[in-house]
Length: 273
Image 1: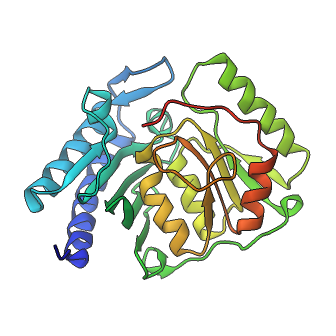
Image 2: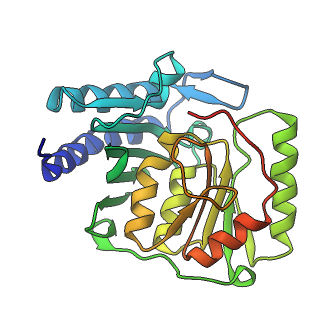
Image 3: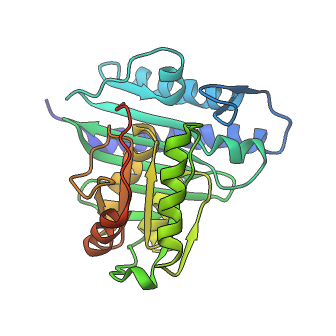
């Protein structure tokens, strides 16, 4: 079956523009907040509204396509990635930031066909930043080409990581131990509260690497393609091939840096998506 990637892409962008308006209007207002897996795993009415807008719009345009949405899965739908065209959606990545009006948040949409990413869009509507990529066509920020830093030396690298929303004590201890490892070895470590924005920062060269345990496929699907199209490298937390459904990631401006970081990380296995 032939796929019209240009049509998929333009339809996606139009829906993201609508979703961005919803987020901007809600950003500074009081929010109705609920919890999911823990007291720090939050969801708002805006997360749900944006996901419904995106999925309903894409379903109407492409009724044969499949969907994986963060809030749909949290609501009980199965997370299944097959060979059919599948849109993987995070309506508001960085919900904790959104609740506190901290302006690093993102809409993330990735399209995979035969389990391979072909379209990636990550939009921060509050800051007016739209990162986009199509397979084989490069990566862009607001229409201008972007590239990774190309940094190969950990001692000169700015690293981004996150604590995540899990309250598992063993996992937290691993995260803290790894943080301590890197504080002594790199230029600096940053945590910004959103996997999607961190991945765009790797793609644009604002940070040299990002590593994280415990995110989900909707946090990484769009960012994977954007980083690859910007010349970056992704691998598993242990240094093996990157696996979108593994909930583990290391990505960097060079393969050398990514592999060095992975080699220093204490490992922790997670239940797959």
